[in-house]
Length: 222
Picture 1: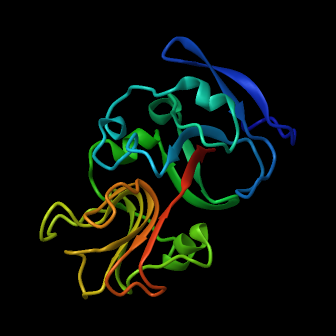
Picture 2 (picture 1 turned 135 degrees about the vertical axis):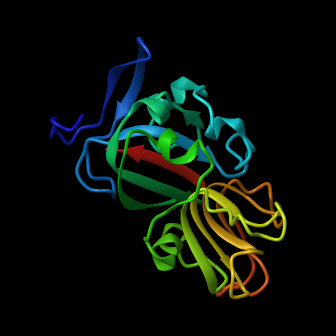
Picture 3 (picture 1 turned 90 degrees about the vertical axis):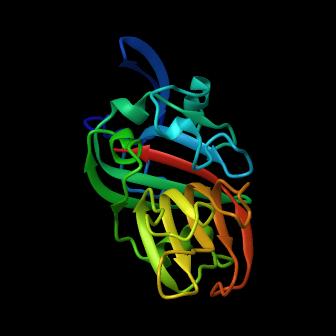
């Protein structure tokens, strides 16, 4: 898509794994800079489809291909672009209610699969305020830890039930990352509000109080 500088989003056919896949190529600047942006995933934070522990994060199985043909709606999808598309930028979008916000991660990789599937932590440095900006004025995080990136779980955590995110940030009220009770991100989990799989959860000393804010998440690459 990179060579096309039209500002009109359009359906295009990609040939992935030797089969045609129709996706909506986003050419306009909707909040992540000029096109074109290739869709990868759409995640409904009220559903379990893309929970942190779901095998979809570590396998090469698509989910609901027609979801890749629509724009920023509530239809979940995981496209073959998850494991087949290299990029230098990742666009993250979060819809809370009807408000849609975006941020960009500058990161080169062979695919999103290559950054996530093995479960290894890979750091990024957007900063906690950037993550909070995806949620808006109601965003809340504890003040410490602030571990952000891919597969954010701490290997030294007290147990397997504290906050984690496949893409996002986790935070703690204590001065370590072993018992995080707050998170913002995509593909999340945690013993507080484990059912929120995308969005913001905060408990025990969040800087804006306790929060349970599921969102509709969008992941695109360029």
